[in-house]
Each structure stands twice: as structure tokens, then as C-alpha cells.
Image (cartoon, rainbow, N blue to C red; front, side, top):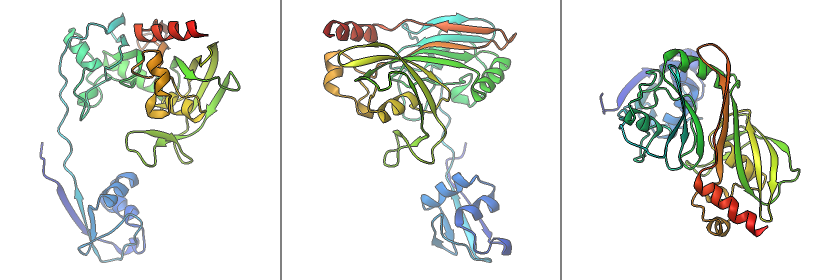
Length: 312
């Protein structure tokens, strides 16, 4: 695979006179409007030799040059042994795992730790070849710092079926979260759009023009300093529960990234957010029958509950 950027240039046709740069790039070079805007924002676009921004206007007959960065090198899947990753269910089409904290769903640039895909490969599992090379078989993800149930497709039939079910919101995803304080009301719905944080590349936030995001929550038990919630997701945005709970001013205990009190986490001996994917239900890809899986809390989360319960 080439590591050299590709340079493409074309004259602006008469029909695009006065168009924004990002719109003209999309029309002329076949990129999405978002990708076109990113290229302009990165200084990769010139008109007659001068760098232009995404909202500048083009002149017919001007030469537009676009530098297209080389695609990143494919991330390799490393087969590894993950002793504490429990197999909850395994059949011809799917494997359901109880993902431990500190394990990513799949390899990605910059991540050097263990992955679910690597752990399955190390245990001798063959999974679907559908999807990008580094995430074959992966139809949904959990944060590195979130534990719980994940399903991975082993067959192409399963990959297609499960991707469609997640897209159509057929899958039932239930989490338990220990959040700071006591939400009012104790049961409710957060319907607030989510997208990247305006001032941080690695955080997400409730923003006016974000993607629709809906989270339902119900109180399981209230403690003096926190509340244990049962949470169901309608959508599956990155960091959705963490962002929505933070927006309610009740962040997940231990989630320092989204405003949790570090002293409470220390008292509960937590080194990550108290968030666990406890149930996962979907139509089995082979026959359409509904299947439901459940897992228990891992040791660190159980210990935190014991400590906070003894204080109440």
C-alpha cells in the first residue's frame, strides 16, 4: 500500500461558479461533503496555488488542487490469550463474550493493549471476514473502560443479520450504571443529540446538531452518595451513557473524563467508570428466534457496591 499522498487537480467548471470550496470538492472529486470539509480544514486544498478554506467560494476556470493523504496502514490482529474474557455462548454463527475492562473491541491506531478479536483468535475462533480488516466480525463495540456482553459474528450470514438489527434498533442492550447522586426523576429518558466535543477530539458531548441519541433509565437502588440505574439504549452512540449521565449532572461513578468526583472513586477502589453491559438480546441470525444473554458484575464493580452499601 502506498504511503505517498495523492495529488489531484482539475479546473473548476462553469456550473460551479460561486460554490463553496467543500461543495465544489465533493462535486468534482466524488468525496463526501464531510471529507471535503476535512481536507480543506487541513490545508490540503488550493485554488490557483493559494490555500483556501472550506467556506471560501470558487471561481470558474480556477485550478483546484487537492492533496489526498495516503490511507493508514492496515492494523494487524494479534492473536493473544485473555484468561478473564469469558465465552458466554458459542455456536456456528455467533460468539458472545463477557468483555473484561481494559480490553478493546478490535485493534485501532495507537492502541497496543488486548482486544476481543485478538483474544478470540488466540483461543482458536474463526470469525466472519466481513467488515474492515481490523474489525472483521465486529458488529458493535464497548469502551475499553466498560465491561460486559458483546456479540461477534462468526459467519457472513450472522454479520449481515446483526448489522441490520443494530441499524434498525432491534437489538436490546441493557446496562447497569452506578451514578453520582440521585437523578430527579428517578426514572426517565434522556433524548439529546451527541457528537464530538467541540473542544476535544477524544470526548463526546450533547450538541445541538449531533446525532439523535436516546437513553432510558430506571432506579434499581439508591445509596447515600450514588444511585444504581438500569439503563436501556435506543441508539448506540460512542460514550452515549457516559455523556447522557454527565449531562444530567449525575456522571457514572469513576468516570473522571466526564466529570465524576475522583475522591468517590478512590473511596470505592475504582479505577474506571462503574458501567457494565449486563444484558444483550437479538434475533438469532440462523432462524430468527429471540435469544437473550445476561452476565454478572465483575469483581471491581461488585466490591464498589459492597463498600457504598456499607456506608448507606
